Length: 251
Ligand code: C5P
Image (cartoon, rainbow, N blue to C red; front, side, top):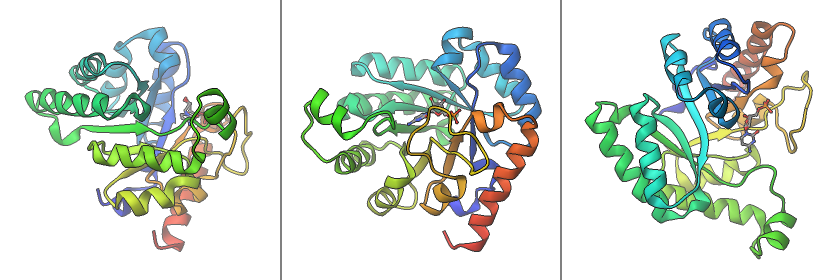
């Protein structure tokens, strides 16, 4: 992917963390000219089901399913194929589910996408380590005696070797991941907060500009836009910030 050619708008993934189809549809309708991709996560999906995918696509918008699959290879590969049958070609798996889980899924997903003629659109991402994890959780709770930064890089390497298209990772890890995994590898950065917004429950936040300058291709952002008084203005401010980082600095 030539990520230099992505427009600022297309680099924004909006988290549709609401409970109803009506709220989700209203957000997509209002923001589709300012946002590239709309993210359906567990909250919305468990409330309204797969119907939401069609609703977003009917608005002419792109879908990203953030289900962070983590199960035995057979279950994850079948669930992934079902997603593709629902028209979802961008989704993620938890890399900690192991390379066997990932390779089985990538193989079956490619076959399903090919049958449906959407092979070129298929992008499967790996979730490295949730930002809610710290060194203490990793080592004391899970018994992983590895430095957390090295552990994230190891997970990104697994993603690369198992032919995932990219990873979800923090901006702090993006530069290293880009170096190891190459220019074509997609890096999606969550926990993004513009300086003018409220941090909410996120930790280790970065600004849109910090994320882009660190080499991330996409940013995931929810409440700074969805809870803003003027959502379009909030999205426009983020677009302007991304544009500024892209034009004033060589990526
Ligand atoms: O509202 P906010 O901008 O905090 O939304 C963040 C979204 O990104 C949520 O949907 C959350 O599930 C997701 N996410 C995250 N941190 C990660 C991975 C995903 O906040 N490390």
